[in-house]
Length: 264
Ligand code: LHQ
Image (cartoon, rainbow, N blue to C red):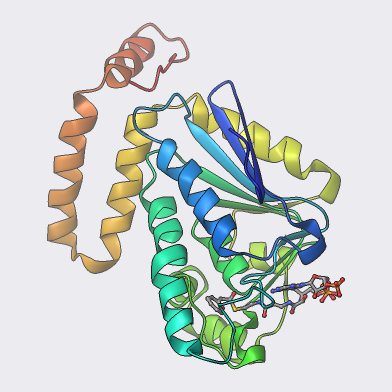
């Protein structure tokens, strides 16, 4: 399957989406969001993929909404167009990333600005090149952070730092993002894809169903108290106990060998 604005390849249970509008720093268009959504829709339960990488081509990861895209920023019915664009194109992508049954790694190769930064933060792991930076750029164009940024950022780095990034719109270097716990890890630029692929391999060789259920438990946690979350864990554990990977994990433990998970 070929796409207009992204590239998608898969090998040995790992899929890689590359945002592919390098001249615009991979700024998001409706077509691009639709294409990302299509890949996400096909990934997950029932597909052979067990991990996904999201990266950008050229020197940027993603500069957020394409500010030159006709229709979105037109003067006429601008506010309706933006609302429609968010609900119709952005929200499904963010929702699918969060709910996807396989882990997703954002391999942030360069600047991640506006919705591009929050797209990365919607992934399970953010691995960034040392030269990358994250910018909550919205305030520079008089907009409010969207794509889930105001939900995820305070939880990752605390209110004070989230306010700083969002109200001032300062670029945050990848190294600082790592030190703040905003991202998983920062690596040398030339090592980014090899590191992302090694992490994807580790995840793809894991107990895929249990990992999906773990994502579910974590997603439920912010709105639950401890007692409610204990119930969620017990319910999800019942599902994990019904998988072949649990039987294999237990057998491998008893036989003192590494488990060979099949993702079933
Ligand atoms: C771009 C863009 C871009 C088009 C660089 N669009 N061309 C959702 C729903 C609906 C509406 C509104 O918003 C949203 C959510 C959002 O994402 S709003 C936030 C949108 N993004 C931004 O405000 C970031 C805008 N870009 C920048 O501030 C800078 O380009 C950054 C800091 C990302 C990179 O700066 P530089 O490294 O200095 O690169 P540059 O500015 O020279 O950009 C390189 C080229 O990419 C340039 O084109 P050109 O033809 O002059 O070489 C830019 O025009 C183009 N580009 N971002 N978002």
